[in-house]
Image (cartoon, rainbow, N blue to C red; front, side, top):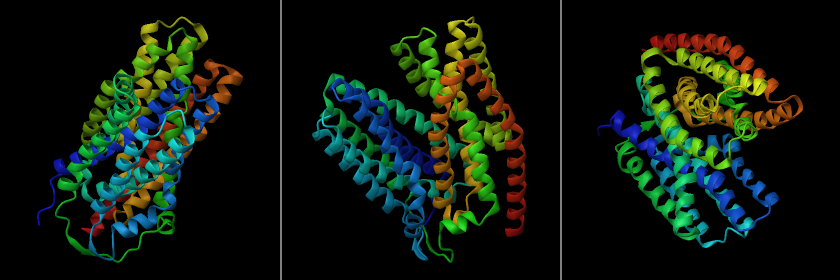
Length: 410
């Protein structure tokens, strides 16, 4: 049996990453707008954020999924997990279409089950990608991951709302379900075909992951990088509103940024990781983020920054630099992950990302409210600058360790 080519593998995982982000876009961008149009109170709409919990806590069940995916004797079961989890997601969206957006709690319960299934599929998909892609393809694999996230979010948060308006809630939900089926087929019938029978001695576990010093350092670096890159994200929109931009314009900027700038930056990041390596791209993205945050800081203090530069800073910071940098970070996640339990290790890094993002968003709001946008953006800029050398040293150390380990195994 011949294994799938790197192109087939990347295409397959890209479809899954787009599908997961379609679900996220429907849930966190489309659903709140539809619920509000149906007169649902804001306090109930706020409960939509709880649907993110499976994504933040999926590390708890990742060892069980990884043990099933990689049995001690037998074929890799990634396709089984993707098929079952994907079927639950499709069925959940079909059921969602039959529920009324005005009745919040049944809808939230249904989409929470969908989120649980999608996050479980993500464990298998990440583990499969780490195991299957050679180090030279990590950048392209992560470009598919990050670029797929931007494209899927644009579909789920943009196209879905358009279909709700043009058709209705039911047909829009069912259209998204059909799209999930189409996006899952390249993985099931391409990337995951012809997987060999193997004997394995390692049993995946959280304990095995946390015993590794490089993984613990990786979690710390992940927290530092995510804090430096994402802390300011939630305050950009409010700052633009207070600077005179209307909500429709901001929505248009976000949509265009996701589709064009974010996707292009993810592809560029994948290419640059292959040419210059992870460390260079991580550090470059932090300094670019610091530059955009400095523009926001100047604009907040002087109110003299032209609107055109604010637009460039907003799209560049939230879409361009984020996509460019996170392609490299996720490539580093692959290098830090043990191929024997890649689904567990990679999931731990992602959950660190999610938990730090949630906490950082809360802290950002408090700081901006207490001290103003100028102080907030200045602090975020300084944080990005300070994070750069720490990331550079750690990424260099890990790469050297990986090279030595590869030489010993070879």
